Amino acid sequence: MNLAKIIASGCASIVVSSLVACSGGGAGSAPFEQDSPAPSSDNSAPGAGFGQGDQSNKPPPGSAACVTSTATATAKPVYLVFAYDQSGSMSLDGKWAAAGIAMKSFFSSANVKGIHAAMTLFPKYESYPAFCSEAEYTAPDVAVTDLPSAQFGAALDATAPQAGKGGTPTMAALSGAMTYAQQLQKTVAKNATVAVVMVTDGVPEVCSDKGDVGPASLIAFTNAATIPTYIVGVGSDLANLNQIAAAGGTKQALMVSVGDPTKTQTDLSAAINTIKVAAVSCDYAIPSAPDGETLDPSKLNVQYTPTGGVAQDLDFDATCASGSGWHYDDANHPTRIVACGTTCSSIKNVGGKVDMVFGCATHVAPVK
Image (cartoon, rainbow, N blue to C red; front, side, top):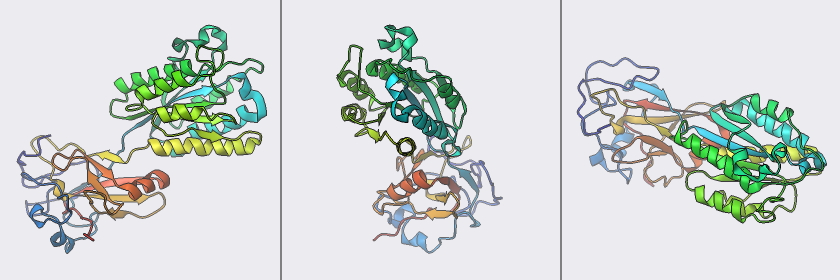
């Protein structure tokens, strides 16, 4: 979109939802204008159309007469590719049953709506010794599916770790899952957040990477910039898994205790939720303007409604110096809005919805 384009009509709007009637072409009535500047970086420059002069006219944007339209914002989609350990040792200490309850709860929860997932089970004992090959793990047991979904629970119920059968092909499983994640990123997940999540109770065994997390760490490191790798370690003596997580850009593995099935279930649920929160983004695409029209970034406001709460008007803060509010991805050519620190944390942990409100002068954070 060319932000320098001149609007063809006197009162235009992005018609997404809850359109408010608009007549005439008076000041402040249209969300598209000629050569409209984005909010200034110091939050207060009156020459840019922002600052204290605007603060005197600060009605709730959702109800103000200047509103021309609103749109529920949509964050970047999230795609999680799980590599899930079904080795024989997962049958010990109640790990398989407890972990299964936690995983099935995650995949079927209403709180994961909007997330997409796939799952590969490893090792593939039926293909021994080929189970040490990446090729065994590039096709997931559950292909990418919108959550919530019962398919993952059904896949877990249809299998079980085989006691006495060891072997953890860490490098092969991670490599296969990463290859599938890369395929998603090139196709259905081009504009999404994609991550690999490995849930395992052991370090590499049997295959060429036996006792060495280096090869798996290299795979994670090579892809960390575009596809982070999260590691969930189920059990003790798994400190080496931290190396894979660090290489994959996620700092350290999330450890789950064993011995007490109830605590195993609780710990794993918390670990997966931590990953979900980390993967969810806090930036939202601005809807495209109709043909021949241009967005006026000085007449866009943002509202956040927490789950079970009331709508809150968020201030624009170009530098996020206040820690809350929002800013544009690019002040000169904005295409997305991005939530600042504490606001982003609230969105991730509390949930709710974010709305863009068009037509009224942007609320700017007060200069302190």
